[in-house]
Structure formats: structure tokens, C-alpha cells
Image (cartoon, rainbow, N blue to C red; front, side, top):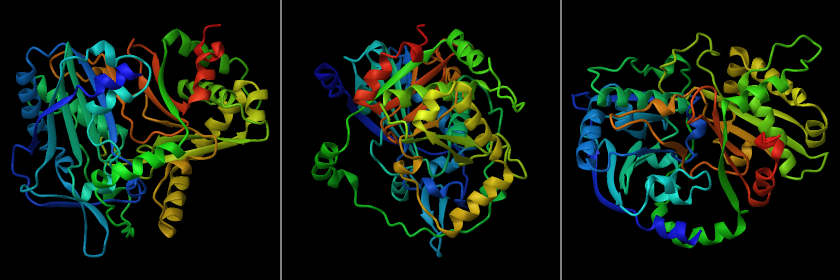
Length: 447
């Protein structure tokens, strides 16, 4: 680990610029809605794409990326804006042509190779390659809503991104990324325009009494040491399930369908219960301990009227399932899968509306502990075509989440690098539980 830490120090920022849309947009304001506001106190959502090659033409590639960014921001101009509040204290996205735009940093890490970064363990080596570590979305009142760091590696290029989670979710993030790649590979326009009218899904004006925290850079030196001593040691690891393993997990869960004529379990439900059961076992919970499964579900097709896939903003809600650890472990996997399936199916337009009304009566920003006790919380989705994001110098060798928004039990699902139905499962767990999970042959599908 000392060697890894040493490599982290060898990332040197060489320049920092800002990129605005290439055409005049004018002044534009768009209020945040009930789906956005709970995430104001989350951290910026970080992604890292590692590309092999491209380092020899690094300067040319950076310029090409910036030129493409200028064009794609004509449609996604909200990312070049700032958070603001109107006279009544309602949060909104504000844009005008005088704003700085998107922050783009260039960096050099000539001693770090692609191979160093595609290991499955940890995020320590990734931290200096992604901007805005430990920065709250609320900071968008004084910082760009999107920050990008392009780092020249020994044999490749790293693209680290920090998106303000108060203004967009995963579906919107990857819509932007694929659109930017389209422009960079010669398309005159993007194939799907973002739908920017948030108030079409909910037009409730909510005031949150949140003030901007002190600048974290100034406060970090004295606060970090104490906080880190109190927190349990966490580890992050990517578990790669090839499509043969995914198919086996799904067929096992569906081998004994519930007697009440429930529909077959989906790939997601099957993999979700596989992870939930084995993480619960790795935690050595008592039979009577509760464990919560949480999924941040896309609601674009669930709301009434349905919103287009290109809706730009947050249109996700957390869906919770709870049971006793002993019940989850003692019963076959279809027991947990049915709990998850019923919770997801019940989250229809009526349930979404009820959740929104409940939140609007007593607004509360999310904190990690809200995911539930002994939780397994799933974000991202293998539906996102992350390995198709090709800017003209090849497809990514690896796609990872940064160190922000991680806690014991956080899981990110990604399309598998090996393609097909393969899925990469990125898990954060307390260190001793992670060690037990790593040695669980049934979880790893080695038996």
C-alpha cells in the first residue's frame, strides 16, 4: 500500500481552464424539483474512465475533447452553470454566458500505467486522478457543476469527472458522456437531445434551509484526522461476474419460483439477492439483526405521465426492503429475490407521488445512514453502456467510481468489461467483512 500511496503523489496538475458552450445561450434558470433536492448534501458524483493509448498525442486529444465539450454543452448547458437560489430561497440551476463554465484540468502522471489503475482493489490510487474529492453538491453555489481532469499516463489517458449530483443522476450522466463522445468522433450533432424541463415532472417549490459550509480546503487539515480515527476501515473491490456466472445466478434463483405465481426474477433481482445474502453472511450478523436492501431506481417510466429517457436531472428514488439476517440466510435465494421484486413492483406512480408529498411536508437531505441498518445499497446500472464511450482513441480499459459517496454496503453495478451479459460489481465494505467475502467461494461462483 505504501507503493500505491507513493504513486498517488506523482500526479501533477499542469493547467486548469474553463470551457463554455460554443454558442450564445443567454440567461437561463431552472428550479430544482423534489427529485433533485434530497441530494444537495451528497458529494459530487465521481467517475473515472481509463484509456489505453492516446498518451503520445495527449495535447491533441485534450484539445479535441475541449472542442467537443464546447459543442455538446450547447445542449447540456446546465452543466456549465452554477447552483443558485431565487428570492424565496428555492434552489435552481442558473446559467448565463458570463459564467466560467466547466472546469478542465490537465495533469501528468508519467510513472503510473494503465495496469496500475485497472486492478480490482481500492480507490486510493484513483483519488488524485479525479477532481473534487470530499466536495458537497452544495458547493455548486460557488464551484462549477462539472469538473474534469485529463491525466497523461505512462501508456494511456485517465479521464476523471465530478458531476454535481444535485442536478443529474446516472442516466443523465451517461447520456451526456455518450453525446460528448459522439461529437468527438465526428457526428455533427447528438442523437438524443436532453429534456431540460424539470418542472414537467414535479412543479413544487421547496425551500431548504441549507447554508454553504466553510471552504473544505481550509477546514480539512484539522477535521480529517479525527474523523478518520473514528470511522471503521473500509475497503473497495470490484468483483467481475462473466455472463456464464450471471446466467447461473439467475437460473439458480429462478429454479424454484414462488408458489403464488410470481413472474420470473430479472437479472438485476437475481444478482441483487446474491450480493445481499453473501454480504449479510460476511458481516457475521446475528439472526435477529435487521438488514436493508436499497436500490436507487430510475423513475422515468414509472411517473405519470412518463418522462423521456433523455430527461436531464435526477429522476431516481430509493426503494427499501428489510428482513432479518437469519431469514435471509436460512431461506433459499428466491425468498430475498421476491422481497426485492415486490418492493420494486410496488413503486409505481402512486407510491412515487406519496413519497414526494411525504418529503415535501418534512424535507430532509440524504445522509449515508439513511440507506438503512446493515444495508446493501445499489447505485448505477449495468444498462449504462459505459464501455462504449469512445472519444476517438479507443474504448475504456476500466470504468470506476471515485471515493465520494461511499459507505459500508455501497454497491455500484457496471456493464462488464468482457461484454455480453457480464456485470462488474464494485463493493465497499468494512475491511474484515470484505476479507470474508473474498474467501466466499459460493459468492465468487467458484463452485
